[in-house]
Length: 287
Image (cartoon, rainbow, N blue to C red):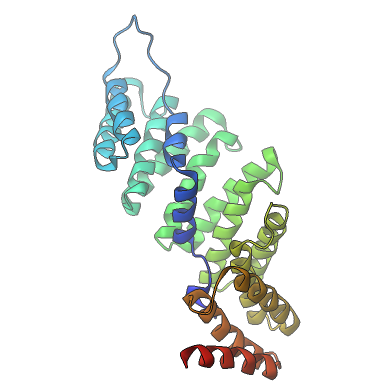
């Protein structure tokens, strides 16, 4: 098994992206805003509630945003119908706010409704379906509904592939999620496939020796080991260690966990001297 502390898990990657990209979550929701009502007309009640939701969201007051998101969605269903495109947007917003508040089970029905409405209005292969599909996949991943999460994420990935190609950054992010899912399902072949595709995409980026690349090599090494491929295991672990050592010191628990994992793996693949080397490093630090 790969060391849990020696890889960047789904939640940690999401946290990192949010801190790096700032208000990305806000931007996604605001892009999906229903069309504004002309100033000469009185705003419908659902639009007024939406405006209050938007204000709370910009202030990052998600609890208040949730109240107004629920209200705007309910009013829209009554005023313009369940399958109106605007109602679909408001259903997505409701699910996304619940996701942000980690109310994952509550998020699922709203996101499923949003997907159904987007599909009814745009067709099953529309690029507009990407956001609800992706968010549904992420929600089921958080709920550890691995197979359901995989199904939604594979569909979302297929949409991006059709419109933006196989190396789009969105695809890379989904592949990292799928690698995590395959690991939890003990699907070693799929885990290897997802990890190899993610590595190919990451190597096209500006920093092919980023720590995240090292994490994917750990996943690939785990898959190769489960498949009984000693050569592949060794190669991936060597690359992972080289990248970790660029970024981390031995005091870091991630590097220590990788050394411990590598030592056990190298014992199994016949590299006893390498196994002793990394166990010795761990002991030296303890001393």
